[in-house]
Length: 137
Ligand code: FES
View 1 (cartoon, rainbow, N blue to C red):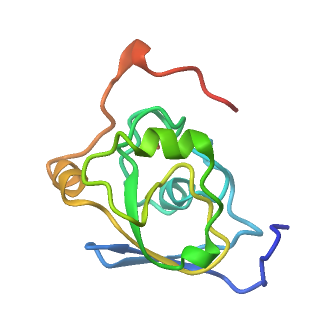
View 2 (view 1 turned 30 degrees about the vertical axis):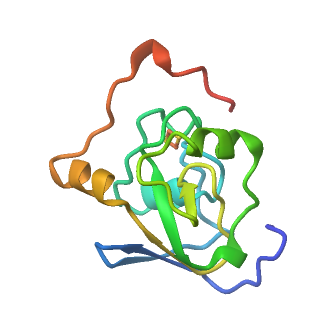
């Protein structure tokens, strides 16, 4: 059981698609992408494509999202995420990496323009080959 989990099924809303995912922390399987209960993990478990070129290993910035609501329901940013996020295009005050930020309650995020355009043009994870370090799992 997650610390702070209040047994209410949280909602993740993704803008501008305006898709809301209800996810149950007690039953959602781990997708093996990013941290457990990360925004990427939630999206992949519910059929929403959030770009993740490095497979959720904190080695790219393609999973960049901007928190619009629910910051108090997010995990603390660690140094690895902060260092990687510094390289993100269109960095904003409430930017996070979708594969690194775990949720424990309702949240609303927006996918930045540059990534949104990539997804709308067909998406599909980019092959970064040997540039991606081995996973931490
Ligand atoms: Fe590469 Fe999140 S998927 S850093």
